[in-house]
Image (cartoon, rainbow, N blue to C red; front, side, top):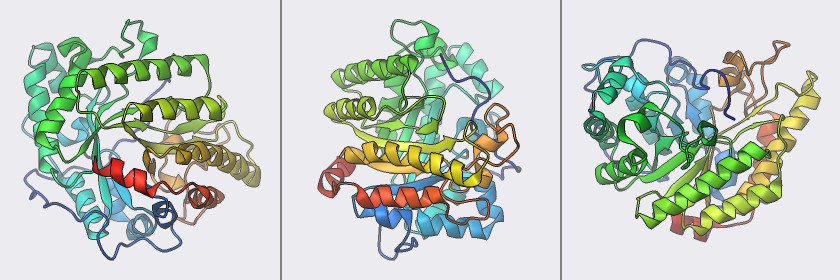
Length: 384
C-alpha cells in the first residue's frame, strides 16, 4: 500500500522573482566561526561526526528573522523545502527561476552551514508542460537539461543531491517494484540510473542520494518496501551507478510500531553495500496521541529517541535533518489527512510555534550526546 492523500510538501507561497541571479561560488562547509550555539542540536551531533539540520521554508526565511536565527543557532546543514523542485523552479518553459533557492544557499553560506539539494526527479509536482514533453518522447533531453540547470548552478555548493525521490512502489505490481510514474512511462526503468549518471557528470562533488519514504517502521508492506530497496540498490551497485547514499525520510507515526531490530538490520545491509545513509525529513505525526500536552510530548520524544538510538548506532549515518524546525511550519498541520481532529497543533518538531525548544529537542540532544563516536568512519564516508 502507499500513503494516501496530498503531498506533504506545502505550497511555497509568494511570487517567485525573475531568473538570472548570480551563481554562487563554492561554500566553506563547516568553516571557521559557524553560527550554531554550543548547546545546539548541531553541536551535540557534530561531536559524533553527524550533522543535524533542517528543511527551510523560503517564505518564512524571508519574512521572519527569528526563524533564520533559530536555523542558524541549531542547524549545521540545510535543505530547501521546495525551491529546488522542478514545479517551483521551472513553472513554464521560459521561466526557470532560482530566486528562493539562491536565498537559501546564500543563508547557508553566511552561517557556515552545509547544504543539501532536494529533489531532481520526483513523480509529484510536474508542471503540465513538462508532462507534455515527457509524453512527446523528449524525456531524456529534458532530464539532461533540467539536471544540468539545477545541479550545475549549485556545483560546489551542495553536499548531496536527492537525485530520485520516492521511486519505491511494490503496490503498483511491477516485478522490479518501481512506482509507476510519468518518468517511468517516458523513459522506462533505466531513468533511475540515467538520472544518477547525469547528476554525477554535472556535479561530481555532490553525493547522489535515493531519498525514500516508509522504510523505518514495522508492517508487512514496509518489509516489502525495504526488500525492494535493497534489491534495487544491489543492482545499481553491480551496474556501477554513481549512487553514494540512501535517504530515509523518517516520517514517523504511531500507527505502526518501531521494530528496532528490523531497522538496525536494514541499516546494516545498506551500509554493507558501501553506501552512506541520511535521515532527511524527520518528524512525528502525533495525530493518534493524547491531547494532553505532557503525554503527547512524552510519546513523541520516546518514539524519536528509540529511532535515533538505532540510527546513530550505525556508523554509515552522516546526517539527521528534520522536515523544518518549528511546529508552526510542519506539513502535518496543513495536510487534511494528517492534521489532528481536535485542531491542536502537531508537536512534530524540535521547536514549538514560538521557536522555543520542546521536550523533543531535549530528547534529540540526549540521543546525539549518548550516541557512539563514529567520527573517523563518518569522515571517511563523507569524503568518499
